[in-house]
Image (cartoon, rainbow, N blue to C red):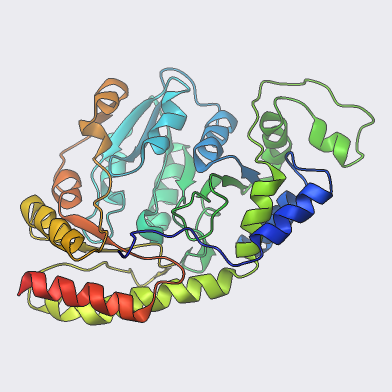
Length: 375
């Protein structure tokens, strides 16, 4: 069986986790958490990076920093994971969904302005498959209407838009290190902060509302409860697991890109024959090979192809059920404008196996089977 996903493993994870245990510092903000934060800052150019227990929590932290409150509205695509909306719904806001572009499956930037009301406080671009949204347009709209931009870059580490790392363009950016992501700590994430004036508040909220971060840096002689907050710190053992992969980030990304390009080359003839559609990479974007998907003719064809591949011992999966059609989406959100592409395109999309260590002969076999299905 060719699995859909195999969590990345480099071989040094257990060594580093043992070092964390032997240092007798396995809670948050230990040596490996600091290494990961520094790596993220240096790699992306963000003012501050803070590891969190998940991308969900990173987005919640961003929503708190943006002071999202009941009655507010936040604009986002419906084709995304539930966490994108949850972070703001938890603050009492309404999720306002806009349609996506069929080429990238990202939020359609031309639909945002029509969705803005006097209650709108923010925009949440989701960089689907590690391919950037049209950020210049989104940032122009945000500036014009004085809105926050919180990038859901859960899939976007090592990807760029016009040379800028995803997650660093908006006010805040959120990464995921879930086991399905390019780099993993099992469960985990990171908050990226563009404006250094928000760093202290972020540290306080992340540390249960205390100023313990300043205490550990020797800036104060004792710490206390100074604001509301929660515990968004991952264990240093999780960070140690992640550090083993960040050390080899270029190698892991290169390996994934090789598989992605292999798929593209082998399946391009099927696209030329009009039998399926492959991903589009806009010219201003570099991507991280987070996923490779194909789009079938319709839902029935996709279901048949996934079933056929399963018979051939290949795990292929579909992705999000659009949030605006879900029970919670109907309760906590609304769709602005017309759903031209969100549902239709989501029903066509099938994701193929892609992970660090996927072998070229496995990609060949998968492509052979897809060709056989269409033949």
